[in-house]
Length: 140
Image (cartoon, rainbow, N blue to C red):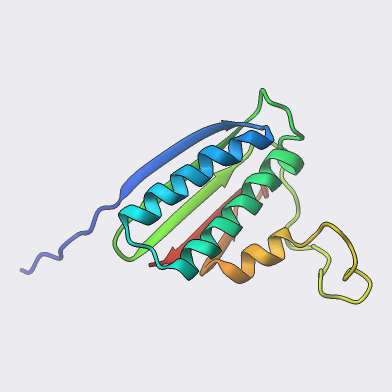
């Protein structure tokens, strides 16, 4: 009977208060993981964009800038992929009925592009049923 080599990843966790300054801690973690796993520049840029967007959505829309509410960020890293999970303490939202930011009537809106951007830049984007957690996959 052959045994498969099981690649176990490393886990990272941040618990951040719902304030704009929390972005610095997330960016430091992204850089640390990217350096350790030799993430290519294009993947790094996509990851930074997506995670910044997801964190801001969690802070502003999810937790309504309530500094007593936390945003939990988990990262699982191995040699092939990085999986990030961003969870807020908010009520969630219906991610299945978002306006198309590329539609002519929305093109000049200043907001409403975050989820669209995340879905296009991450290799995989999975929301939980409640809509207060997103899981983002990046191949490395």
